[in-house]
Image 1 (tube, rainbow, N blue to C red):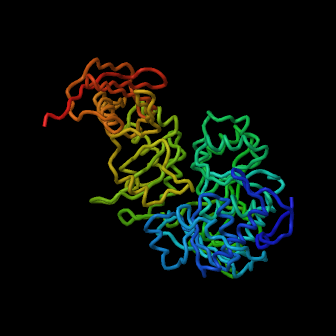
Image 2: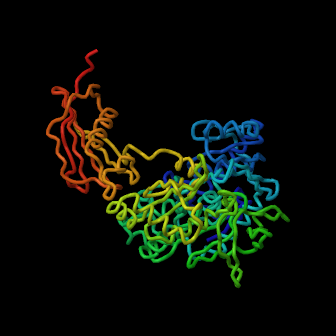
Image 3: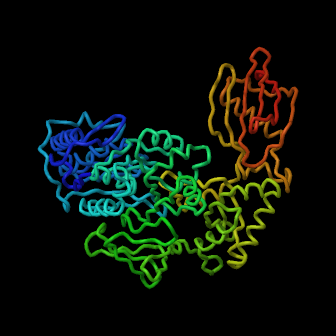
Amino acid sequence: MNWIPLEHLLLEQGPNRQVTFAPALDRQQLRGQALALAAGLQARGVKRVAIYLEDAGELAIALLGAWRAGASVLLPADLQPQTRQRWAADVDLWITDAEAPLAELYADPLPGTALDLDLTRLSLCTSGSSGAPKRIDKTLRQLANEVQALETLWSADLGDACMIGSVATQHIYGLLFRVLWPLCAGRPFLRRQLPFTEDLQRHSREHGEFAWVTSPALLKRMGDNLDWAAMSAVKRVFSSGGALPEQAASQLAERIGQRPTEILGSSETGGIAWRQRDSLWQAFADIRLSQNTEGALCIESPYLPAGHVEHTADAAEFANDGRFTLLGRLDRIVKLEEKRVSLPMLEQALLEHPWVQDVRLGVVQGARASLGALLALSDEGLAALQTGGRRALTEQLRQHLSGHCEALALPRRWRLLRQLPFNSQGKLPQAQVESLLQAPRPKVPEIVSQGQEGDEWHLQLTVPVDLAFFSGHFPTAPVLPGVVQVDWALALGQQALPLPPRFAGMEVLKFQQLVRPGDPLALTLRFDAERGKLHFAYRHNGKPCSSGRILLEPDHA
């Protein structure tokens, strides 16, 4: 495989080779379209361009074209109105899927030339997971140094593998691993982000050699229903964006014969370190690590401006061989009644309990500030909730935690889930954690899918594990009340079907099986307009739970 330095991608040197599939794009087509875009941008006098394209192939064209035109590039994290407004004064042109399509900007191509490593610039935006989003400026030299380091480490393992990703390319990890690195190495890559495990499986089967660029959010959702025999052909599994729970890493190792390769880094620093076989992080080559007086990790790196030392908020502990362990974020230490409480330390203690799959702690404001726990239950934890109830479960977890902290640091509010709501980048902003802790417990089911078949409406639902209606019904064995099942059927029917507005009674109501926290439910609805009756039936794992007919009448007014 012939390596092409990042700054030479627009030169004619090197063989032609496949860049993307569906639609196919080879290097000569990429080069020609990028140079045509560069000419169009120059003709329009564009010096500052913002790019947000979900197609990784078009993103590669747009980046190279803008850089050849001498324009600085901003990759915004999203296209929300507040984001557009934040960067409006810094942008001459927005290139997105909905505006300024690439082909409409093309002109007679400019000649190919090498890009200037120090004058060519890219700006990335942080996710805002620890505060307001920030703009991070990088030179092409910093990006080129990083993709070269990745190739040095893993080229032998990857070979000609197609790079398949579940993460967006607007952020540093997805941009490097899904676009810039494979462009230089000559590895093909998939154009689209694949956030769902079934899509990842389907596209992996289409390639003899493939590697995954993923996040913990996706890897934790990879269940037994996938074709693991086919998936075991994966050359390497990369994961970044957050810590991957040991359970998820171990399960993947059992299924495909390798643990994921975790990447530690940030928009500010680029890659810092990696690990695969144990809990210790190994710094990338040529990165110098140290600690400040507070124990925070400090970084000098070829992916940072020359001479700059980046001070992180990550506490670390070094082993004798230079590898290190992360001890949690120093900026996640809070004060309760004048006492300092480390949220990462308490989260780690909770993760040691077999009922806990994942957890995030936050401060709940009130007459007196206290801690709350946003907690994802393991399978054992869900079984404990179903058989013993919510109060017994949270009291057991408080008792477990009491050996690690004072009573004032024990969570007073608990929100129970099956999965924490990480985004596709594996991020869960602290502000979102605390907002969820402040919100009331849910009262409606989670709709997984819905659709019509003939005169019936079919819905796949999940019963929230922390449903408000479980309280008191019954305290030690939470069961979904029958009246709630009827109410859900009517409310969901009103959303999907043209129903009369007035409830007039019930017929042939049957309850055949208990519905418990976390149960998946199949709900079938059919409206008999002639008789004014909404037929409903719930099933769990193919077995009937409840059914009946709701009588409805038009409003007399």
